[in-house]
Image (cartoon, rainbow, N blue to C red; front, side, top):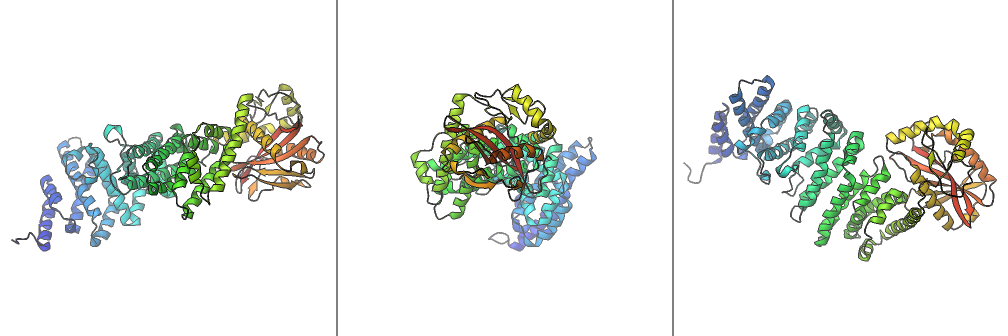
Length: 621
């Protein structure tokens, strides 16, 4: 015998003998093979043995042989040992085995995944579990993590393997089971012990990134009726990262966090069922609050380079705000201290990192316009004001202008909101253009379509006779569709916008110069308001926005008569149009208003909202 231990040739001969004995399926032989095998000893014969025994648990399940409990128990133990060997083979891939391993995995996807699910009871009886899973006391939790690492590694060896995975219901069910499984203390399984992303979060992200995998997962999760559970598991994992992350685990934790947030975005953008489930558990406020807590933890510990890494997670949250009810989404993000997180991350990014600063500017510009919604400004007023230091740090040369515009918008909308609260006038609009009210409105809306509101029964009857009778059925269809898609522009928001318009118009320099042949248009859909004039000589004002259309043509008679009045306006009457940020992900709001001078100030008396749809969208005609 070689005094220095077995040579490579000796070791290969020993390994070949162990593989030959293990082929019989004897548990002790398989254990000896698992304990003695070097990664370099892997061979085609070993692969054949592995997949032979990984098929055994599946065969027993398919036979449903209740009289073979002893045989089933042994098969499960064999399968569990072979899963451990398969992980070692994948972790230390021998190039010569790549092609046969790809072929075997593709041919046995269902059997391997079924074996993973069936072998869980045997997890505590073997020593094949990944050393990375020792953080979990539960053998099943450790087995789940090990199984996910196997599938994640296999998915990377060749694109055809991943395609075969996505075509397998057994694979999708296995991932769903792992995702929903609980570890110690009823916590969901997430590995934060390494510098890389948790295999579970990474594999789910990989599956959801492409439309093929996303559609397959969404369909299967829905058919198993676990949409809410799946959504809950994602949010809870983010909260686990929040509570467990530290300077040692930050790299892997942030990668996992980014993948979790991106997976949430994929699901919400592709499935109304998932969007409803996430909203049911208040996902945006929780995710935003978690990001604030984690970034603050590193900011307090003076790790600015780590805080810089939060640019990508912040952008993931920003992307999620555009799903359906956008104003409500921004309300929830602001309630979770999104603004403070944005300030903190901006202050940590060096001025020479133009790309990251550009992303953060985009985030401010996405949020800023929605501050004029009452639900959003109410949350802005409740948040703790940024300290002078935070304001100063965020005022880099490239970001100072955008943050100045943000504070100006918050101050302006906040002032109007506070006055509106004092006056307690929730519905200060009336959809009868002939209304001459002097007091506040009762808020009496049409029972047929709910899209118009009046200050009194008298105004409602007059408008019904002159205009709304022809509109009501069309308006009902549009209103119902917007309710179902959570893109409704409600009367409370419209009344608040009327007050925003009053305040803005009365302070606007040059308002007295607007002539009767044109109408001023103020664009509030950006953080910095833009203004221009639109000629009223023809009806080009109706479809004046490029790549946008106004399919609510039932409103055209109402607006046409209104704008004809603009050309013969009385000295104390003004007309204007305001473009407001979209409430959903499909249309901007154009609010045409009539203002009357009262006690030296213009006050909005009448408003007509219409929706500008992007090209290709068919609205209500």
